[in-house]
Image 1 (cartoon, rainbow, N blue to C red):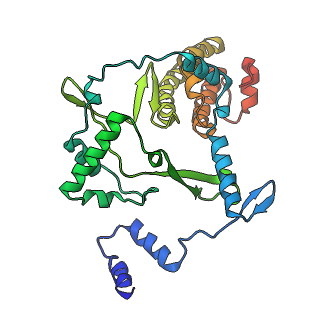
Image 2 (cartoon, rainbow, N blue to C red):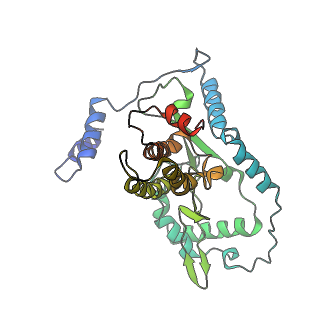
Image 3 (cartoon, rainbow, N blue to C red):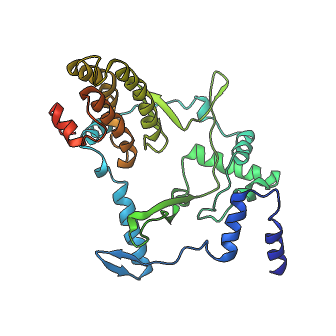
Length: 310
């Protein structure tokens, strides 16, 4: 214990980053541990651990439910899910071939350091396995791949609730669920004409950016940047004392800015409210330029001037 403490303290040196130094100092002072807090339900404190878990699970399930999507998106989703997909194949495609040892080793090397899942296995452990164990793992993976018999435990994950900084810890909606899955798995590298196809975190389809978590934050950032360029044109042709008239500026706004915001909104409109709020300043700034309004003009007055509610 004493030696461990010496090693811990000795790790603070001139080469240690400031972030790491202060993180360790806070731990030494005991300020790094968050105080324990009971959750509340309907204003009542929950003290039972099982009730804690049930209440958190209920909140997480509700937050990720399809009920949070807009009606237009739900209707589009229902229509898409009714379409039958053709999964027929002779399994001669390259991505249906058995895994190779090189793919297994590459997957282990590229793995990131993170907490262990339900199996208690860390990636660091997998990186130091002898060749004989790797061959056993490869045989296991290929057997699962060909038989399609996935172990039930591989379908499970340990969900750890992490409190959001600065939020009320008694409110279950102020926790972020972190899923820890089994570490013993590998990734399949797809190939086209002998060339590997890299896995991307996002893809652009028909002008909309889809990310792996479907939170559409990348698309909103892209949309904001694109609309700002269009607003520059409105600045050039519009002025309170000179420039194009109000009707022309409104027409330009609807054509150059609002049309971009509306396109694909039935899809990206399912994003969280705090993500979509990043587009509000674009919308409001465009209206101010077109209407010749002041920066202090209330938003509701802008909407009333053009006869819309939002």
